[in-house]
Amino acid sequence: MSGPHISVVVNAHHEGLIAVPSIRSLALAASYAARRGVRVETIALLDCSNDLTADVFATHADHRCEIVRVDIDDLGLCRNHGAQLARGDYVAFLDADDLWSENWLMEAFLAAEGDDRMVVWHPEANLYFGAATHIYRHVDMDSTEFDPLNLMITNYWTALCFTRRTLVIEMPYRTTDLSSGIGYEDWSWNQEIIARGGMHKTVRGTAHGIRVRQRSLLRMTMAAASIPHPTDMYRNMLMRRLKSAATSIGNSQTHSS
Image 1: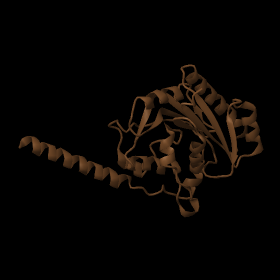
Image 2: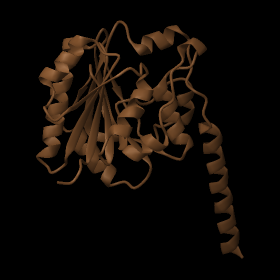
Image 3: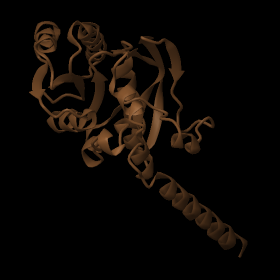
Image 4: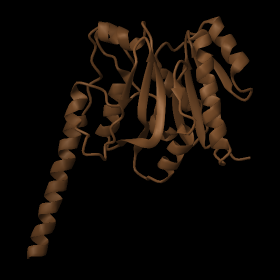
């Protein structure tokens, strides 16, 4: 039998019983894809996890799920490790307290197969629940709504993305160091993808459920007044635009002569 099309990497820590709905959400999405001929493998990375969370995965995860206990203690580096362990053409990230729409893996796979650019895929909508509730719609870079200047003050896309496994290996997440005021590993990575000429796009008709907790890495990062890692995103975007403009001028001069 051929290898998986998609490798799901689940980041787990101290979720305990909260992880049960996430595991079931993953199972529904994987089953939906499998019925349509898309093979999915699951790797659960229990990073500095407690025993209750480990017991929950041992009890509720599919028996084919690879459960790996690690002591990385860094969300971005843990995703890198998951991509290294993965065997699929694509990798999809899920945090062990969040949820996917049932069609997420299948629709993301179809979208990725139909676009040969360097693309990171995101759901169309995020439904935030828990300590706070709201709806956030992701912006597609091919849309006129996308403004790169907004990335200076806010992160357009969550970390629960879908992309080619090789992209994560070639452009790994960078470490978080709140003591130095450097955080937002997903915001930094999202900008790095653009700096390297990549795209962030949305998969229509899909959604994620994002649990808001009183204590989270995001809240700790904000409390530490951290900023993302610096990137060459704006410089590279400007250089590409200048190059494109110069090419257009050259072509017009050639045609006029």
